[in-house]
Amino acid sequence: MPAFKTEVPHSLGKDAATQRLKDFLDRIAEHYKDQISHLEGDWDENVLTFSLTTYGFTITGKLTVEEDAARVEGQLPLAAVAFRGRIEQSIAEELRQELERPA
Image (tube, rainbow, N blue to C red; front, side):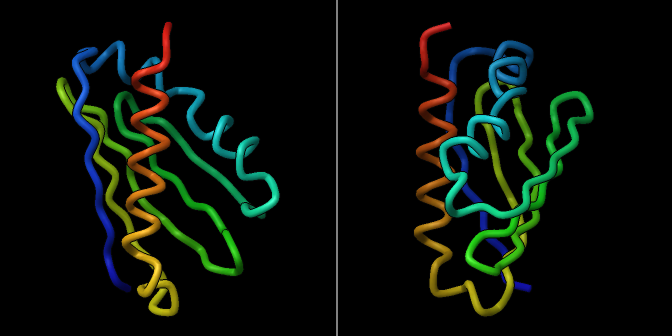
């Protein structure tokens, strides 16, 4: 399966950024409720392991929150490779908005 990855810098520190992102999947599910049919995720300290299905494609990955950046890496089905750039951009924008929103 082809890989994708994106990274968003932040200045919140690992703990504050992780706390800010704890509700990230819920916000994504609500915002994209017409496009996502299945969304699951489990946190283990500062790492979120997730999977989602959109337009019939299942995407899996990990969101790792570090001291100065949030990094998402995952796998795409071969049929979704043409959309890799758009997927990476969308994830980065959603992360950026979540990390920059007022507390």
